[in-house]
Length: 386
Image (cartoon, rainbow, N blue to C red; front, side, top):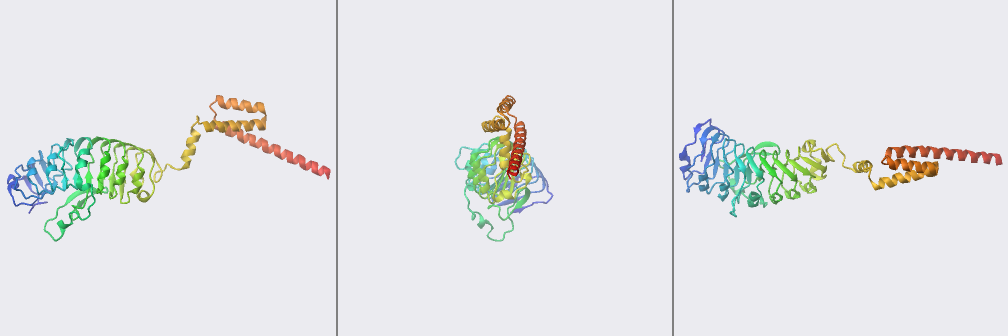
């Protein structure tokens, strides 16, 4: 193991480091290293962990890394690498962690037609790049380790005390944190802050082992697929700052592990699901969606809206019948001619409800006045008879 992390190193990485067959761990993260990544990794390499995070490395990701058949952790994040997605890394049979965040990577993500690609990958972080095109459905189809829940997977790796422990920084629940001892038990996809577009693939709902899913700050559109409601272990789900439309799937109410939920700044509408974790989310989970109603936003999602909606629909048949009955009552109380005149006025002016309400109140007062007069007359007759 060669651990030179946080040592204020400068200059280029020596090419000879790729030729050391017995080297298992090379950790040079958080230095000021520049230049290119060595291109001399050999077939006999024993390298299982390569961490060059937080330097000033440039150029492309060397394809000679495919010779490192034992590689499990590859962290090249927070550099200045300028390349397309290294699909050939999918041939590494043991790769579990791939972090390429904060670089200058670009273009669409395409995968090979090879059936067995990224079979063990459990953490992939491509955030803060310039990847474009649709979200890579073909990539999600290959992520076998994310499609099954196996809590015991990888625990033997940390069975005893070791000098070196793999670690990686991930953004989870809105905060950046370092994952160390549970590295290979953790499952996360972070594709945020790119320029992806199109719809969210339904197949993402098959990645049932996911604990973190972040596809925020892209150009995604269309509806949220209800299949994401199958992610029973997800703790952090961030779909914010896209162009998503429609309603929040009711299936999300079954996500009882969900702690952080962010749908802000989309074009969502309809009622927010209720129950379970949805009682714990605050307004900032939904801000920027003017069409959403229900708790915790201020707009009601109850019967009040339905009633007001019916009153606003001036072309409603039931409203017309109601107005007609009111007019008929007015005709009974005020005379046939007056009643017919009122019906004609209401039909010719679009059946204004406010006018009907005024007339009904007026007719009610007239009827009550007549009843009082009749009672007084009856009382007078009784007194005269006595």
